[in-house]
Length: 198
Image (cartoon, rainbow, N blue to C red; front, side, top):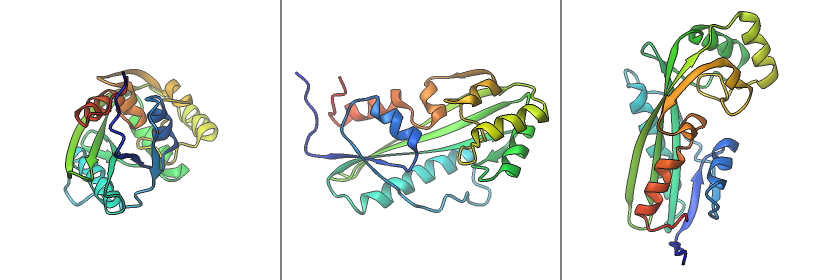
């Protein structure tokens, strides 16, 4: 018989439609809350450390509002040749990012946090995922940006959409990490909190 840890609400701390859709795959009831934090990297901060710090900052911000909840947050940072690639936010920045990335391998670091706000137990995982981009022409990049406008995605590409056409190959432990919510690791973390997904 399925036993869920029913005394705690499940909160997804994200405004991302894609993270919400991923979490819906687990068929657990949950609410979403926008953590609304400053996501600016710190000076000389390693990209993977940025992802972990921001995921924890998000979870702590939400925990101040919910004393009896399991709170899930994630953050993703893309890295190429030591350069951190954040959300481009506009067409010009996205164009520059994709021109820089073409023909190269980019590592996407996704940090995942689960906090039990009742016990203050924090679980954190960082799941890297490597993407090799095709050698794209400026015309192909412009065509992609016109169709998908991925201006709020680290690395300027949505692999869950048309962005898959930009990619030559991918490797990692969980393809969901690239979209922004590593479900394999999340199931492990939920099981640690006695949430039976199956």
